[in-house]
Length: 219
Image 1 (cartoon, rainbow, N blue to C red):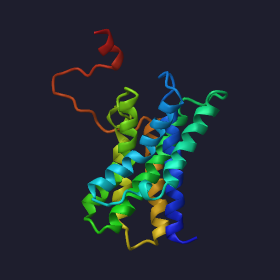
Image 2: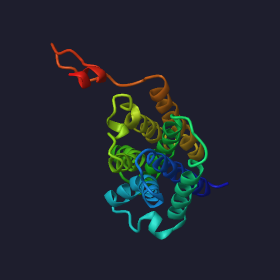
Image 3: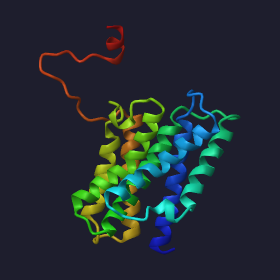
């Protein structure tokens, strides 16, 4: 399999995974199937769309190739139907989201690199591609975006670290191996953040006591 085919397959997997997380985010929100599909589409395609608009990379991928759009729709409908009859573990969405983040962040870095932009912009586009769709999903479901949660502080950081690895070793490691290694870095770091409570230091003002979420609610 050549590198272009690998990227295409990875994109479809990423679209499917993110679309499913969008559908799962509708749990308890009293949405009908149309709302679920909309969530799936914006989650799956939002990050790449924002990236392409920012980079002035027209036409946008899913507009030219409807396979991405149909993949998002079918994945969201499938999740809608399956979840009506089967329970899924509470952290399933977080694991799927970690996989989608890893795939999309490096695919975003690869797209930016192919356009000849600088290393810093490549890292930024990786972060946008991996995070923007999930942020739109969370805003539409009236949730605080994962990227802003204390337990999710390593969300964007994972994408940044994986993208930095990709940029540093670009041209030194074979393309396929580099892409897979970068994705694994993001995925493992994100799982560590979810299951191991791995997070960045919080901002604390000297002399002020840090309240727990329960204490803040009680106050």
